[in-house]
Length: 186
Image (cartoon, rainbow, N blue to C red; front, side, top):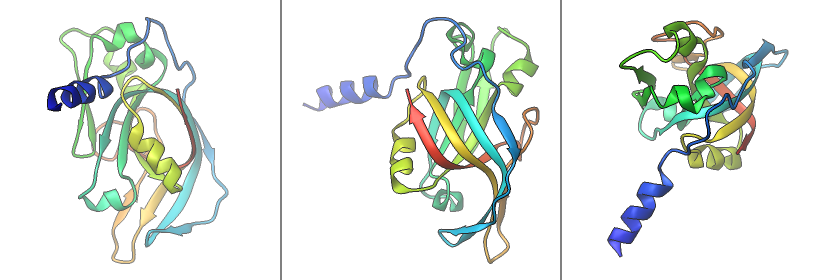
């Protein structure tokens, strides 16, 4: 019985593959948010920009024990444009750890700039339990439509976590912090 369960777990967690071609052609859309800050789980959430994205999930990582898990229990590495194309992605090794997204190539299938500006690690703050459940069930290869806000989160003790607002930054501080108001998964 354990062998059957192990096989089920292996295949149910395997990335979904697609035929070659761009699956999510639009760039993420962001514009000024005219929303007041609000409280969530003891944190003040300040919407910085409205945010919408259709993207391919490159990797999903769950967090339970770091402070940020109170707000964002799931990080999604997302790709759009060229970074949603199976023929490109099969040449890139992608991983996540410690709230970062990593990629490695032996030879570049596209330029470094394209990889870095067409993918990002995003910390997902669910607006409700159903969205949290949906986020936790996502697996690599799925297509997602997400709408919400890029935000800054603060606590009374001075802790702060702020979203990047740029598509071209890399490294520490380059991740998006997304308050997810709606999500669909394909």
